[in-house]
Length: 324
Image 1: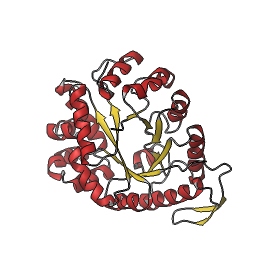
Image 2: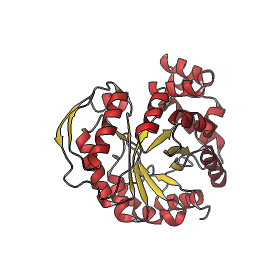
Image 3: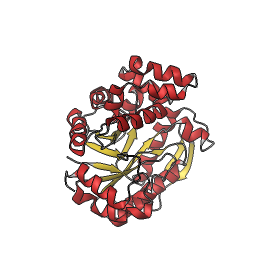
Image 4: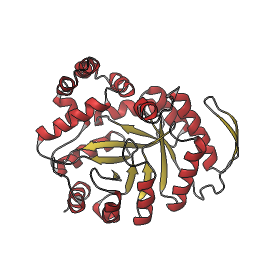
């Protein structure tokens, strides 16, 4: 199966990734996808990866539609497409109020409309069109890329709930899923309602047989993410109101430590696969069997001690090809 890896790896500097990225195809990875929260930006790791390993497909998951202007998103995408012709996919998404508003000082206003409008603008710009006119959430005055990509750039949309999932199926080249269990995939794809959509899912995995460590880490991450309004609504829609109700109640009351402890083991296990590398690979295959075309691993450190470049190489080899 195709297999992606989120880059960069936790605790490893960008410059330390050169040998690791060059080795990824022989380790069983076909793709490198970036993220953008409070670490590296979405484009720089991929620009480096494009130079380091010309066999690797690349993608962003995701570029927030609020934190850059529409034209700049198109320019950055076109630049990366030129560096990796035929190998780059642009993933867009609404992101969250924490990233957009609290960290960047930008109003998080009408995320569905902004996402839809940026999607439409970027698709037109990357196709070499002159874009001029009013969108619902912004106005563009005669923008045309100086050098549009020579090959089409797929544009995918990160989506959580029915309206955005339907938009991804209707207007984008694919959908990017996040923070869901393998059993949740069919419900999401039913809302996408497009068998031709490229389906990418970021899957957090913790390759360790220390279930206590893995669950503790998973619960802290779940409490941090799934208390964000969009993710809370997503998991209510998925049917986890009873399982996660105590988490949301305690978090809202400011009882953060108790909220983390209230995440059920079963939810931690479903959302963050863990175990030895073979077990993790089997759990990732369940996502593929459910309809994901490209699983992108976000690999969590298997213990409290930091891994250096050699340690990450060995671990990723075991997860990717089962060797090493």
